[in-house]
Image (cartoon, rainbow, N blue to C red):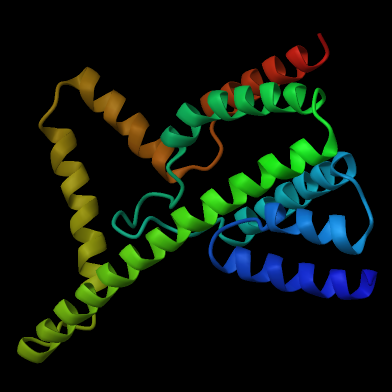
Length: 211
């Protein structure tokens, strides 16, 4: 049973990471069924899987660039910095509320969450497939009428850089410094300001967790 569960978990994690997810949540039912564990053991184990998968994906995609801004990273850290406090806050209250519930209640809440997630994901898939089909049709029409040059991507990248430089030249010295800092942060994964912000959030979370 455990060997079969391990094989199923392997494919679930592989498929999830292909779609950009950690696959940890999908492993909880497998852990409960095949490893004869309770929710108190399955949830922390799935959380560890999530952290490990996310860290590995971050390392492998470290040099990936933004699809529309070749001089910027693919990760929008501004959104991460906005959502992090609320994610930590939700985790903090969720863990404390979880201690007040039995395994059955936790399993029911988890099942409802998974069903909602599946429904939302299916709707997103349908929408993305429609958009991709429309985009593919537009590209096909473009190729039929006008074959793009092989260096189009390179030219677009150069044009983006020149556009950034042109925008900087239109502002005051103070504004240029601020915009230059923003462009620099977009190119970097780890900066001092960002690191201090993350450490502050983790510090608050850990402090509250021990109170």
